[in-house]
Image 1 (cartoon, one colour):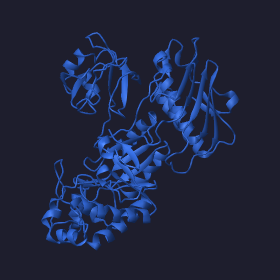
Image 2 (image 1 turned 90 degrees about the vertical axis):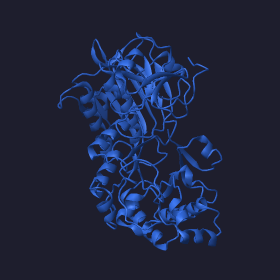
Image 3 (image 1 turned 90 degrees about the horizontal axis):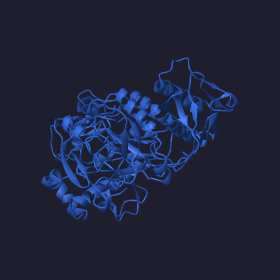
Image 4 (image 1 turned 135 degrees about the vertical axis):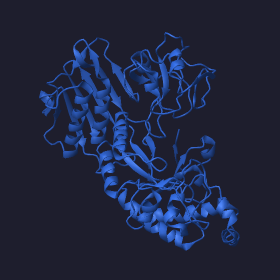
Length: 497
């Protein structure tokens, strides 16, 4: 049930309920227990009936957690919004999704009548759900088998093999347990109409239908991507019963509300090892997220190997960067889980790390060093030099060949203009070209960069600061400053929370 008094955008870093600050800091385990954490918190299913800011990813939890501090280890700021007034004996809470790295999540849950009547442990909540009125379970034991048609392609078979590995981890079964067989001999029969594209693309069909009965399950999907999403739902439905691991009888027809469901990982500010990136891709696949927005350059580091400009990573990364082979490996790992990888290379601001090895790109003389603190810094690329665009043309071409996704993120946010103001030649350029101010100069820069991005076959994406009427309508705007900044935008918009 909804409260009319609940605020739509709670403040990060403290606990809120019904618009009231509960006065509990996120690192206070003892006080968190007072509000219901630390008793019964392990099974996950979508929260219903809570009015929140748009695109918040919310979970309701129940089950068992022994230490509240374990719940908080991944992220320092937690927001808790209970559905009902909390007492010391009430175990049910709702909270923002916890990730082990800095992230931005784009996801919204839409409660349905079925969700309210039958709170299954499924996230995000499917488009249509029908739970059987009579009790019954499909048991998952060591003889469990997946049935595939004889014409199943290599990628579909790989998808099923990955599912069986996940199922073994989920249930604690042995490596020799479970198998792939024909549909008539299996506990779950999979029917896939056609393979998905070699690399995932925006707008591909991810729909599926899953029916579970006590005698078996059937999963049907138009594409391999749909099979991936349906198998994740199957895994989520498994629970412990008196008969062992089993799934309730249910019929689900599902397709995503949003074609772009993204997670941002900021390797620019905080280098993140390859195995951690892959672990997060596994988590993304589990909840059907389909875009890794990979932030790869910042004031604090340049994180990808460039063979054309080796001083980018050689001098701007403290030795912490991904080789091109590692990048290809991560892209392949993401592809096998139905996840696109969109790179972000910040320009013209948030770019100090570029200038450590190539100070000629900057708007003020060097030398430069990577930043050791967080914040908005003055260094910015010089938009008036032809050499800047020659460098970017070659760099974008190299990265466009490395990252196969259609979209190429240029950042474009938080340029304070201090270096531009202090440079007489740049100020003369602004006047000579009839540009009104620094915002006009950045628009000039973005227009030229967009042409370079398009030259190399990509669609430019940037934060909402780049939005200007003269940019092509094909570009994608990622809004992080709220709805007001993109209210009049007639372009594709991604909302970040």
